[in-house]
Length: 112
Length: 413
Image 1 (tube, helix red, strand yellow):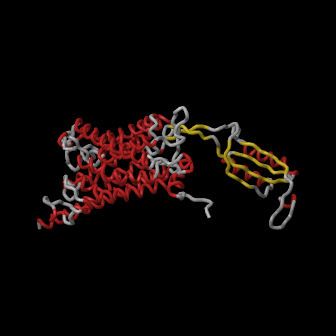
Image 2 (tube, helix red, strand yellow):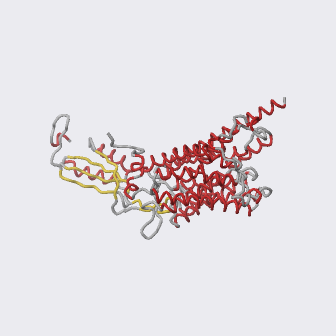
Image 3 (tube, helix red, strand yellow):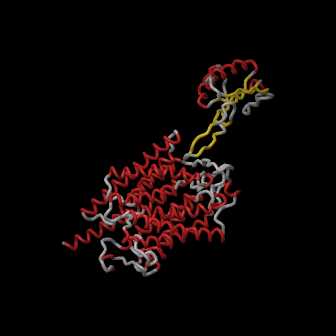
């Protein structure tokens, strides 16, 4: 099992959600986050004085998947979140030791 | 029949005066919202406290001694003891409105002057030092210059501004520039907010927390200004005065519109984007610019005067920023710099009652008096109790250090 953490541009969230649903992913967690990568920040003017926007708003999606559908999931996220521009985001994949469904106590891939 | 008509006129003028006064009172809400919108959220409760408290202090001090200093004609009577209920029976020259209505209309003006100060010193001044200053400003400093202008008294027995050709219809100088002069003295002694300037002295932006509130505040001030200028005609129950009131309303509105458009366009040209806060300051600048004489310009001229205020205010804000005079809401530029412009525009359309030299002497008298006395009072407060919160309190926000409560509490139990 793997935990996929994808940081994407906020305006792409509906596309990513729809395409993940399309391949049968049944749940995900979404967080509004801020950060920067190669896109860096930018400066704005307020009453003629500059201020820096160092951290850009992004959306963080967390999805737990079985090893079998990992590649397909990554492909779908990469495709649907791609805007062809710097700042489109990143996907991190980490090993997932255990998953438990709280209601039934099911564990492992059953609980995903 | 004649007596009945007089009574009707008395009733109508009094009613008009009171309604206009209530409109000007509502400007206190406008200042409160404008300032609450342009400070950071950690300083919201405190700026609101300052605004409601200064209004109450102004009303009380003006009742105790301010009104008598300003309009007592040299005779002092505390607690409005000279005011009689009936303006016809009590006065030597029968008034056309109730004397207490006159007090009510005047008292909301001193509150306006004081409201100007609170925005300029926002986010770093101690609450109680500010309120102590409000006591002196509304009970003494403002009434003194008011006595020399609207009160018709000689300046320390030396010269009389009215005779020199000074005219200020509703108070571009007497109310607005006076408030700004007191604010300037305070800001100079107080210093800029932490983080306003980089180590090499470059001004940095500290964006306001709530632009919907700032916009609402501007609209409230715009509305209240109809009472401010319209009420300053002092009568409405005759064809002549009703016409004058209508012209004043029309011109006041036109000037605000001209000021907003001018500031919006200038900001767009200078900064590349539409800066809402500059547009809001532009509307207020237009209103301040027309306040000294809203009854004689044509509507087109009023729009131009307002636009001149709108252009001036943007450059003034940028210049004061560079001079390290940190004014979070632009009050010194809107009310002070444009207030002076308003005074100097009076002779353009009303050469009979005002001259450039008279306006300059009047402006200098008001500014020097208010600035110097305010500086002394602020300095005394600084020495006695301190006027600025500690750097740590400033970082945490004065809501917690001065009021002990946040405007938008979360995670409290």
